[in-house]
Image 1 (tube, helix red, strand yellow):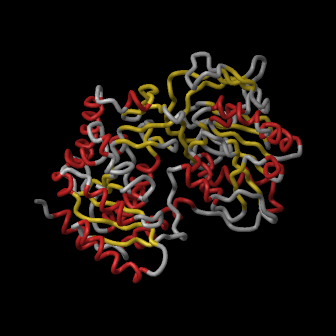
Image 2 (tube, one colour):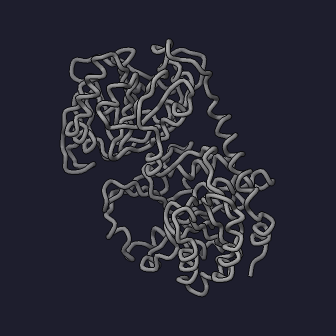
Image 3 (cartoon, one colour):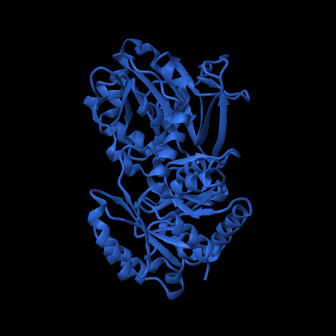
Amino acid sequence: MLAGTGSDVGKSVLAAALCRIFRQDGYRPAPFKAQNMALNSYVTPEGLEIGRAQAVQAEAAGIPCHTDMNPILLKPSSDKTAQVVLNGRPIGNRDAYDYFRVEGREQLRREVHAAFDRLNTRYNPIVMEGAGSISEINLRDTDLVNMPMARYAGADVLLVADIDRGGVFASAYGSVALQTPEDRRRIKGIIVNKFRGDLRLFESGVKMMEDICGIPVLGVIPYYKDIYIEEEDALDLQTKQLNAVQGKVNVAVVLLRHLSNFTDFNVLERDGRVNLYYTNNTDELAKADIILLPGTKSTLDDLYELRRNGVAHAILEARRNGATVMGICGGYQMMGQVVSDPEGIEGSLRSLPGLGLLPVETVMEGEKVTRRVNFAFPAGADNRCTGYEIHQGRTVPAEGEEQRTFIQTSEGRKDGWMADRKCFGTYIHGILDNQAVIDWLLEPYADKLQKTVLDYSAYKEEQYDKLAAHVRSHLNLSLLYQILTTHD
């Protein structure tokens, strides 16, 4: 298990690296995280929902993702509440106090244990990932994902410490010291992550850390900027481009407060023909050739905010001035005439007028749609495009309007709406991972297009290999394999 001294220490990416390394070394690894908290989710081949990080780790391992890799997914809807997704299906919203009470935890514990057991019969090794810090002793009795899960699985634990944020000696020592004697014996190594500078300057630090913790340091992994692995945490949006530039097709993603599935735009972000940036600045939206309204965990709340901060007006003005406007999932819902939530599924707001760009109406419904999608694009073309749906809500034509479908799936389902060549919406996440769709989206701006297109599948494989090589070169793999094959 990769356990952390805190949140955001890089466990997810290191888990992906180990999945690829074990695969390269002839094993059949699989990722596992008992409980994950993220808005950025993915749909398995069975049409069920898991955290995006475990889908990425499965891809690095070269296997299909499955709900057994992430049996509990928490999707925050506010600072204190989250939707609980169990084995790929939502079971309701819970506030933090109720969710972390001792009562009822054993049922969830049995579910995550059963998921691990099923996974463990199919793959070896299982690359387990913890969550947050392993030293949150106030949550020890209700913890499902860190040391109690390691005990159940009989797992060796590697402690991941982030040196970039400072205090690495205190965080590593404290994380070890606060464990019970049984759990302390289970921690077999430390990985220092995100080191900046000359590694030789930390050689004495490695010896000091081993002395105070009584555990070997398996490696010091340098910080990197030239390897791209899909992010899960929206905090990474802070590092994105925020402004329009000259000489490229400017694509603005509207920065929503509850933005989800921002990985929908990863391919465009790496397409040399465009400048993709995230913004809720009305001046920057006015400079965009294409405006993308992304998915959101709370359509009504974000729609209310767009009206309050002037972004809604800026989108409509850009549309009048010739910009393309495309909505995905919640963004598609916002583009319609009205969004209603009569049962209060999202919260207290019951109804709001949409942006009026598409003649459709949306009603929120309790049942969540999660499924993979196959389609040809444009309709009738000889190609195979893929995506997935994760949404609550049903969108239908407004009264008197005839359906103007944007996508028709291979199963014959009609999806989305197309008002004209520059105004359309869809429920399909990952639609912009398909080169045929991207080329069609950029076609009206042919005079600005210069560079060649990106083979994104090949690009991702290259990045997993680069990540594995980077980690392999700074990790004592012989000691790691010795730990994995030696048990007390």
